[in-house]
Amino acid sequence: MASSSEKAVMVLAIDEHEHSSYALGWTLDRFFTPFGSDAPFKLVLVNAKSSPPVAVSMAGPGALGTEFFPTVEVQLKQLADQITEKARQICASKLVHEVAVEVIEGDARNVLCDAVERHQASVLVLGSHGYGAIKRAVIGSVSDHCAHHARCSVMIVKKPKIKR
Image (cartoon, rainbow, N blue to C red; front, side, top):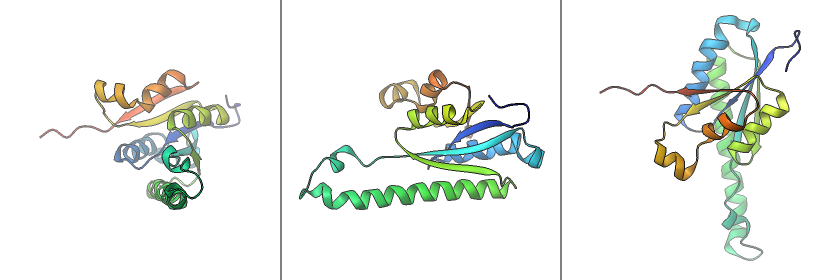
């Protein structure tokens, strides 16, 4: 944990989904913008950059995968750059300028729990995709995993559903 002279650390997961942008804006509005430079947390935004698919990376020399691997890597880096730039723009629009941004390759579940440990974070914030129980069971839920394994409080921000 942070000493009394240091701010506590908040790690916030960012990705390409609208739920992530909503969670970032919601968090900035409640924990940063009203306080200006006296915000109670140091903010660290973390993007878990996907790795190239195993089939592409294991194709071997002379195989089709060798030709596509650099292209896939470039596309994943561009996506990570777009995600971090959008997050920086959201922060700037809310007048929050003291933000650390990290892009780490790997599975989001592990990347986020490791970031919490590395930064000794007090809270981890994630956006919720709003998947149902069956979809979560099939594809897994990053927020469920982090809620059970992160060594800090976990706040899952849900975007309100629009009533029609």
